Image (tube, rainbow, N blue to C red; front, side, top):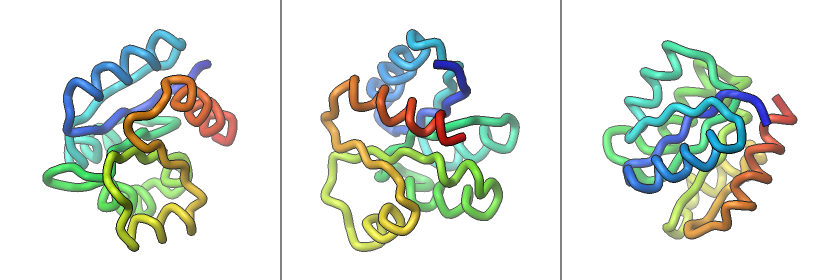
Length: 123
């Protein structure tokens, strides 16, 4: 695989492990630990896919998605969400309307690779 991926999660261990896995697959990976830091990185560089947790401090995954939809609508269609929580109505609506993939923690690494590959193929 080739492409540039931004991994966003407030759990640093998860973020770093996912970054290592995706980098081992040949992807260029950057990380952020909250939605605001992710927006900063997105303004400074181009990415092909964003893998983001839904629940984060400062700016959650839905807030990040809405900002992307306004500023980078093409990239907003290539957001992959992950969560360990039950989805609320707003999150379900965004996922359904956008046709966005969701990884439920704990998820299989093969599933992560498959979803990222599919998102890259659509880019």
